Image (cartoon, rainbow, N blue to C red; front, top):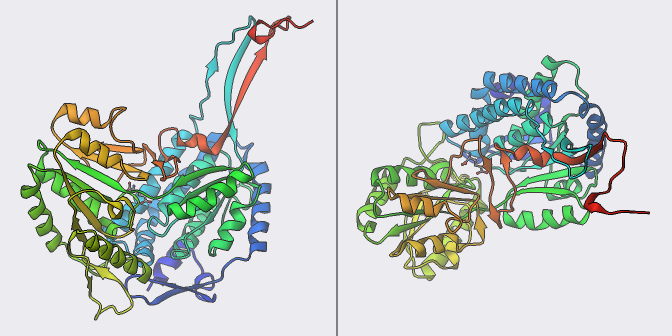
Length: 496
Ligand code: UN1
């Protein structure tokens, strides 16, 4: 099934057909790969190798390092379809979204090439005569990347493109639910390296395994930054372990993203925004729309339209023209059902959420996206379930809507649909949304790579991708230079 794509990208059959760890496709549950997992010793060895690579790579001029990422972008362009298809097979994404994810990789490569010539520091006025101050940015060290199944390749590229131009090697632990795409990305990185020529070995390495393997990396003092994407639960174990050894962490954890639908909103636009953000990727994006606060005056207009749109969304094989593919696995389906049961117990009116196509795909989990109407926000709506469940609640007063939108532990993405300038700007103001991402007249998902991506509170506080996210992959140094013949002390201190 995946052989043609794997061989086009340069992955050898023995890498994914001869191990004892089975990889299943969520499309129909069949085994598409058999890989060999790493041992803890192997992980430690790879980290040592990366340390050696760091010593060489950090002194290569940054624009030259950018050239490697330019070449990676070229290889990705050439294999966009191959990798997109593999993402569909391994993560169950529909074709458009698989391709979109690879485009996101190409975009970050282009961005990082530009950044490689813009690793700017400041010059700072000194209080002392004949002195000046400046700030310089230096490579940080080996970067460990932990990624999730749902954006199995883009997250690697956000980290890797920036880490490499910033002078750092990368070690990547993909989700054990999506290891094959990591083999493909590594093979494509190697194609770029072959074109680049003179680079140290071990600039990019993959480690395959479960939590124990991730932990070996997290606990290793030679990993300067752990960039981890996944559940809040995972972040809660990774964060303290890295902090204990004074390493750096970049966390991208759960989201519980909301939309406020105001009385002046363009409802046609809002409807499209809701459908893409709530049911796209089968509700398995960290930016998925999970809570909808509708002004009471528009509820009767919009809710039937949402329900009827949900009824027409085609669910099925992600490569056969459907809009919604499968959930990643049985656990995910069970979690969804258990949340819907809790929602019913809490008085919610549930529409959808049933398993479909079970006859055709007994070992895969396709569901109709669910809508849950609640009178008010409760703990069911406050917790994140990684599945297509949209909680719909009404509001009367705008300030109350903002309060409800912020009244969750997570703080990733948020949006408002309104044509009222005051509401829009208030939503984006100091007393508005408390999320890392806040949009106007656009849904919660589908961010471009040019902005910093990430969020507050239990989302973990990290920022990846655009803007100045590159700074997380470098260490800052403050320099004071004295070009005078005196040695005046700061703060006017006279000493001796
Ligand atoms: C994720 O779900 O982990 O904003 C990342 C978005 C995508 C990235 C999602 N660009 O929906």
